[in-house]
Length: 465
Image (tube, rainbow, N blue to C red; front, top):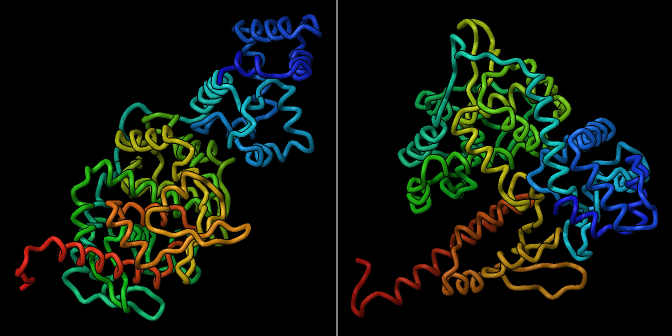
């Protein structure tokens, strides 16, 4: 909604408070006169600049978050969290300031609105300031490190290695060191296998593998390409062939989404950092000044300082993902320059343009329990509609719960639903992932159902032999 629409739906007392906040002269009891006075001030370039400067100064921390969002409507709890540093009654004061409004539909999921033209004006204000803060260079640095799509090649190497070797897991659920050493010799990008004692938070297997390998391995498992079963690692050839058929940019996009999902726990504002980086374009940027710009969105995480999070968990991983490249002035000097690649700009732009249900913003909404029950912890009709084909509802008071069983899997497949897409959806929305015993039974039920379907369509007298 635009500002004129928001003003039109606002009450007279709200409009009066806005006019008073903006120091406007108008007839205080005429809604039309107040509304026209506010719009006339907004349409005047000098007055609009004064408003935007004031909003971006008085509400700086919150407004930075608002302008980086790919939407302009917010849940009340979300806005309350953004405005918490401003003390009690901050939402009411934001209403009075004239940049926040109530949605006219009380039943909407996002009842608070920042008008799109207000958000756009504040966005332009910040982007201009951000670009002025970061030092740039016009030519390429003498030494450039760019991994392009090497992560896809090394995923293929991992799959080939697992297929050709008897890869077993230790009691902690990790591959043996000899397997890791052999993989590092085959990978295009090699990593040290010497890991600190405490490693956690950045994906399910960050405790056992170096950062890039952990990301690749977790991704392969979440995609179902690699399966851990009975202490061994195996390849699901059907899912691997389906993966290989995708376009390169689609593969990289899925990797990026997986990275955000894995790292947004320890780095809650990772999505904001990526949106900010995208808005700076594809210039070569000074890493130090870029770090200072992103610092309000960064945090330390246990054994990682804020600078470690920036350097190791964001910059290094974006290079691994092909989203960015880094440059140095000499072969021996540390990286000094950062540039988003063309593919990276495309990937970040696509993520920025996606809906509020996108993975970068989505909060896990399901708990998949070992007893094959799916409990919806954040009720969402769209989510429940998506999981419905392969589950049955469990009658209960106060809890929205479902159960997945052999007959529900068979029913969904029989009706033509895509199980692989369903499983990926559940993984994305699950707070703790899918327990291994549930994964094993799902695979068996799917295989059994598909086998029965093939048997039904087999000509009489024909055997598998």
